[in-house]
Length: 259
Ligand SMILES: [Zn+2]
Image (spheres, rainbow, N blue to C red):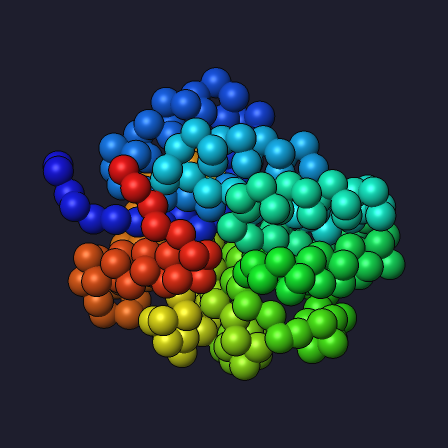
């Protein structure tokens, strides 16, 4: 169907090996279906790749940063290299944050990489893409000390109390596949509190596929399923939800996708 719907997947990882066999075909299909994407780096290699991909496609944008899992590799030299990449056309610093659930980097390393990248975002006047998992008050303390921040809490999956804290920080909430999971009633309740102007949709592809694709590889085309669920939840027509979240993303990241 020749839908004129525009959708903006504000978080995916197209440089992951899960897309090696069909990356260009998928990007062409995203273009055909008018889906724009923020492709988020995880480390220097993926950040560089994200910039390269964004340079070739007007509906794909790059975020560059060190994920908390990779924080142990964030040295002063890495910071310099990251700043160089960010200055080459990245639209955000990300994804960055704290992950005390998997603890793949020591917490001290996560905290210092997080702080340093928040400062980089401030210096370059870029929004941030935040990753949070079971990091408790450390997350809020760092944001308070380094703030104010402009950005999105990606893959938000908290309850109403956490949503209120995110909103109080001025953040947008990135809503993805978990909104469709049966057990996530607290998230569905939380989302209803969020002003439409603060909502973004995302996939986190290749991770977190929405129902009915759990257990399979996720991809940014499936952001439509997130949009459908969110529209249903908020009692809005899909077109209105899609257009509002699209414009929110354009405003936050300062971009204007073209097809
Ligand atoms: Zn991610």
